[in-house]
Amino acid sequence: AVDGAKRMKNIILDILEFSRVGKFTDKKESVDINEIVHEIESFYKIDYPEGKIHYEKLPTLITYKSPNIQVFQNLINNAFKYSKSDVAPEIVIKVVGETENYITFGIQDNGIGIEDEYLEKIFVLFQRLHVRETDKGSGIGLAIVKKLVESINGSIWVESKINQGSTFYFTIQKNNTMKSELKITLLYICIGITWILLSDNFLLLFISQSEQDHITQLS
Image 1: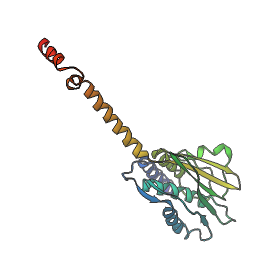
Image 2 (image 1 turned 90 degrees about the vertical axis):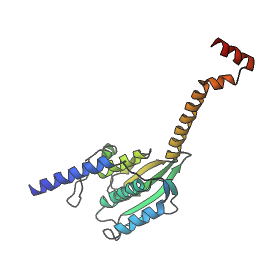
Image 3 (image 1 turned 180 degrees about the vertical axis):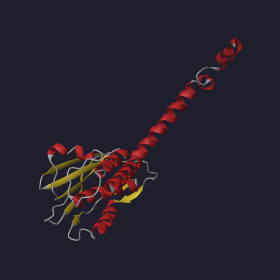
Image 4 (image 1 turned 90 degrees about the horizontal axis):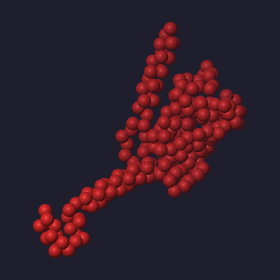
């Protein structure tokens, strides 16, 4: 009964955490992804001293810091958590693609892998595919990652092979706020132009003084 009550409490806390995802108040800033990964790496050295994270020349982005930290932390945690018991975990983080509007990261591990039929289900709230006595949590981590990535206009997916490992890919949209601000600016311009076009003063610019006098007499 005690274990059941604790589990229910944890589920409620997880639901509250999930509901807050994406409601960050950060402003865009220069974020060095290398520094984020380095900080996360130092944290996991305690629990996984033989584990390794390989990364280099990751970009510095003008983006929101807190959701990026959460995304990398959750995916790295997932890679360590579902590593093989007899093999030291190794994680490779790199940029796998970049376009004018998006940058795509890949986080690859050598863990236990995921069956094909579950590759989409793992992003569903409270969906746990691997239940081992040593595993903790309620299956909310990847659902949070998906919501975080989507909150900054990105997308996430995974490729995996059983007993070989998984690679999580996620994209981050570049200059998202700038595009939104540009749309707002264009909207104000359109409103301003419309107001001018409807203004009598604008029409008077295109008619002669005699025609203006004639209109005045008619009115």
